[in-house]
Amino acid sequence: MRAIATALTFLTVVAATAVPATASAVPARAGTPAAAGTPAVAGPQPAAESQSALAAVGPQPGTFTGKGFDTCTAPSQAAMDAWLAASPYRAVGVYISGGSRTCAQPNLTATWVADQTRRGWRLIPIELGYQAPCGTRTPKMSADPATARGQGRTAADSAAAAAAALGIGAGSTLYNDIEQYPSNASCRAAVLSFLSGWVERLHTRGYLAGMYSSGSSGITDVCAAYHDTRYLRLDQIWIAWWNGVADTDGGTYCADDRYADQQRLHQYAGDVTETWGGVTMKIDRNYLDVRAGTPPASWSVTVDNATAGGFTAGAAWGTSAYSAQRHGADYRFAAPVASSDVAWFRATLPATGAYEVSVWYPADPGYNDRTPYLVATTTGNRTVTVDQRAGGGRWVSLGVFTLAAGTGDKVGVSRWSAGTGYVVADAVRITRV
Image (cartoon, rainbow, N blue to C red):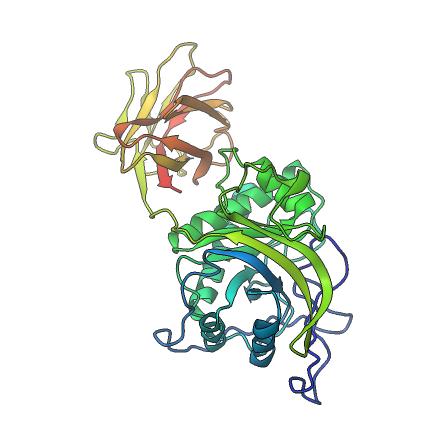
């Protein structure tokens, strides 16, 4: 990874017994463009192997406090054994997936994974793919938050499939590597939306969601949005801050009360050369303080305006099937008025907890540009305003809220709008996160 410094980080193994005489040139650092004329070669996916016999010992990295390292190409077994015997490191970062990988991975197989974890190594699985739209690296995620969120889901599917093929099982944390970028408001919204899709999909696949980035860009943005209900919260963060201190302090990049429950890794030095047991590698140094966890159980409910027992509205609310962007057979609409007349969506939630609330509506120039949605949280109604003239015919996230268990009115659409045009109530989706 190269999140702060501009030097390349790559693997070199210089051991009398470990380097063949025909060793090829050192590959480009993962995530770094190959030299001119040299094609970037993504590491091959592991060959199919019997997962019953070849699987990591427990979730990765699991519960662990101590030092680790990362490097571009998964080291040979001889190198790993030498460093296990002599070095202070017990965790290793490995690039398992992503379109930005530029190092071949001849060693990275299910057999290699099983062998390392049986010997006592902890693995840090890394996806290196979509990058910030305002950065220089490619491929770039979309600058449109909704599209970026979908790309985050796609990346999570790819990473989860690669992890499973390697025997890195459910309960493990997968880390999305988003390299340094010159953050601004629109770029930040895209990155946070992408990561929300990453979190959402990994949780449904049984994995925890982590993210690696520079302290000055991705980590700053993620920590600043810790309480922002528009985005899903990561399970762990990996802070690239080359201050030379082996701890998990985030400095000014991340407040101490955020990701504070054994949820941090710190890349505290990079592009350093070390020799242990006669084997030399060029690495980045990391310190981990993480613990194993269980992703929230997947649960979701969709309530349409026609769902029996799931929707109530006053007499002023009409019914229409005008727009092809509608959810289901029809939707409800009403003119704005300066009084409370809320159409409510009712649902039964299995437990009090964090839920993402998404809404579906047809968009039209004649609809309201400031439609108030009310979310009935455990601390009172929260209002989120949506422009129903744009972005229709798809799920639009209102954010993540703490909702109470049991049956009740969970999401409403109010007529009390400062905008003009009809307010629309069509469907809502509530998903536990």
